[in-house]
Image (tube, rainbow, N blue to C red; front, side, top):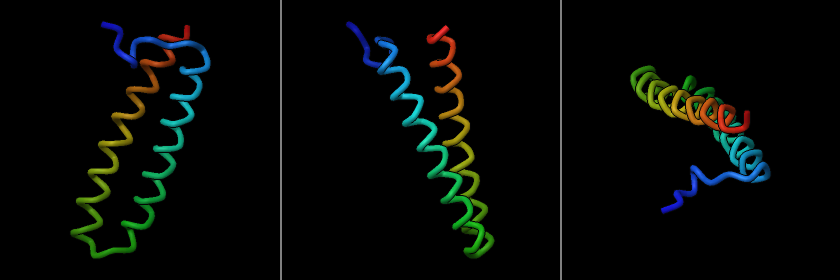
Length: 68
């Protein structure tokens, strides 16, 4: 079985990295928005977004290793 995340051409790799960067930017924007909400809600939302960003950064690192 050839899992899509393990089968990369250079174009696929670059497109996936752009998608990840775009998602990170969206999450950072959402964190800015969360900061303007009620503190308890903002804290929970910010933590969730930080977890998502961390996971995306891990994916990005794996892609960079594949690229090399």
